[in-house]
Length: 240
Image (cartoon, rainbow, N blue to C red; front, side, top):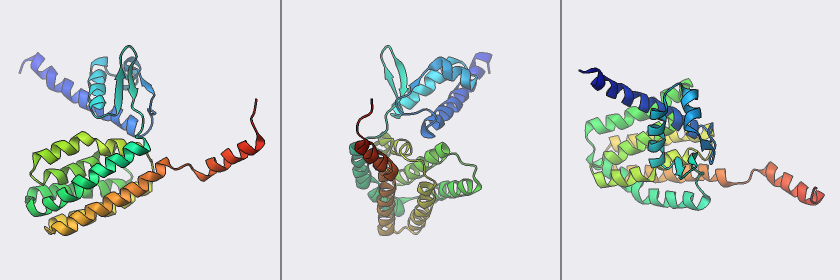
């Protein structure tokens, strides 16, 4: 292989590493929603050239995690609004339970082993404390995508991929209970799909989405202490 040919795979690997690092910074909240992302600053922080940083930001823009504005540059996308949140789950309820049932009836052995393997890896790494929040979000997305893929219907896979739902939702609320409860719900899904029980798989995914929506809705609720602080401020009157 020529030196030029060897450079291309190396550059691709570097771009992937930078992409995962930036995605983790966004999911972990290190880069806050709306915060400007300067290519030169990120390049220095990560110790890489600006090329893989720009390539990674373009990929993140396609995932709706980053926005690019003319003459300004890149910024972290705003978090989902309550309205967009409800719309997203409405779409998920239409797609995922049905696809889970299809996957139960159609999956190949290699597909259920991949689904089960992802669930097992998530639990092991989470319990060992070796999985970052960003990594958990990526694996959760991979788990759901694997179920959709096991339907054998590429249209469902394409539709689901365009939602970018997990990357958006995991930015809403950093709470260990979200991860712990999701792991148990994943196990129920794996069991139903492995048994080829389409009805149980449909119901398990519906229950998982219902629980997930309930957990994440709290991200839009005003904490009690803030309500109390606001009430106290109103009683005290305006300040100069």
